[in-house]
Image (cartoon, rainbow, N blue to C red):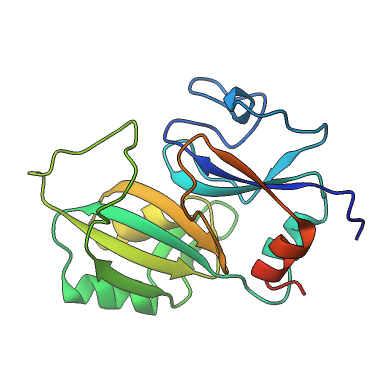
Amino acid sequence: MSSSHRYFIVNKPFNMHSQFIGAEGGMMLGDLKFDFPLGTHCIGRLDSTSEGLLILTTNKQMTQLLFKSARPHKRTYLIQVYKNISPQALHQLREGVLIKVTDQGIYKTAPCQVTVVEKPADLFESGWQYPDHIPSTWLEITLTEGKFRQIRKMMSAVNHRCLRLIRISIESLTLGTLQPFEVQEISEEEIFQKLGFS
């Protein structure tokens, strides 16, 4: 592939759509204070109420490479769910749960990694915070698939509401210290290496 392509990572904030035009309500990627080149588009969108790592690029083949290749790519999220989660619910999530998928009807999710974690001390604030007195559990979950609103549907399947969802990595590409609204340009060599293309 031509090295003339450009690549960016963004820490998408709460209430921002993963697109430049066409969304109603909330912010769009064009509101970021960055001069993206013509043809830049988003790879692997997050819904407007989700936060975290987005990849933007001028390379139109990236979606095929990352999300439609034979080798699945791991995506890791930090999530806050309402109430304390039981060992039984964790087991169900790890083994796969039934969710509704628009084009496939009822779908059983693939086995995944789920771990209960402490709330990160340095976690950036979002535009929608839940008071500390509300009972909740923080989880780290790693998936190799990405159905529409999959994590929220998985939590609903085990009777928990997802309060906050933050994508923190795709393969070994991570947010690092990138703050909400911040953009970092990354070389093709580095992003390919971190995503396991090379």
